[in-house]
Length: 449
Ligand code: GUN
Ligand code: ZN
Image (cartoon, rainbow, N blue to C red):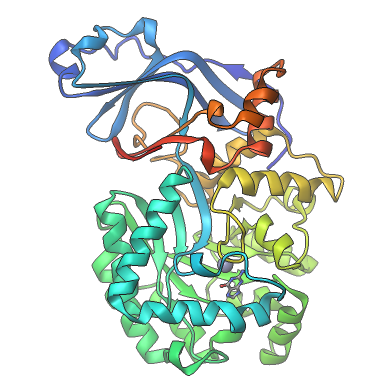
């Protein structure tokens, strides 16, 4: 999230991408105002755009006037008028089982986990509930315009199967994993070093690389795993190529002290993960609010990602993420909701909160940088940028249609916007899931308001 130089441009059109009427007869055509954010300093905007979708991918994107065949030639045509067609939003850290405890009063992290979160996750021990709730969760993501997420499951193997099955049915690109947790948690949520390893290995072999699904080895956080389990988490990463690692780090001061007492030989919190080989470029560590100089250096050197979770951090009173420091260190960031610690699945709401967290520390995040982060930036953080995150031809047709007329407040504000950047900024500050008119995944419309 660096400060951009404004650089508006139109999508590059490929004149060789001419469609015959026969090809169009198999294709979907979306019309609207296209906007994407391929670089932190670049907005591409086409006020009257056409997006042609063939076999789930964007086959052509450019001014509608340059289409080589008539609109009537297409199998399906959807005209969104002046609504914005943008790349699907990406959430780099969220919990599938925590929607029922979103907005729970009063506690900070450790009490919040014990009082609200663990009991909520227990419900996923029933595979039928897990399947129903996974459907509810993924449909909620889509209604919020989020087409890809990195997701914490629960400790239950069958519930993690249910989550992957639900994502596969929707053809979503999802990264998820079964939580590993063998101490400092209720017995009803505890696995062991061995059972956690075995269940994760089975899930990896069933799901990693199936369709658009990938697996993340998921130790909850250092306090809930024994050294034996962390060691086995390190070994799990050898089960397949391209596995991810997701966990939490340095979220709350009491948590940081607890980690120090549980791991007296470790130099610091990050060192616990580093020691077990859990720190690498496919590691996504949520929060990172109270890091030491050494920890920042280790994160940079191992190219680990931090998932920044601003609505969670203010809601749980955890602290303020230091954007300036991350920029100086060159640590790659993702933006994330962290629901149910976070208070909204809307990435617009996360971006607005990130802006306010920056303001409290004298760091200005621009509209450009924030929209880039929600799309191409988060795709890069998750190593998915060759597939999603922009409207380039060849990318998967994961799209969201945002319609400002769905909010009277926002419409009134936009009537006074003098530039696209001003409109983009007001939209992320005032907008939320109510703006979502439609969400498309792999060229299929999965949500329609
Ligand atoms: N640290 C360990 N588990 C959790 C969780 O579920 N949510 C958040 N915000 N932090 C955690
Ligand atoms: Zn979390």
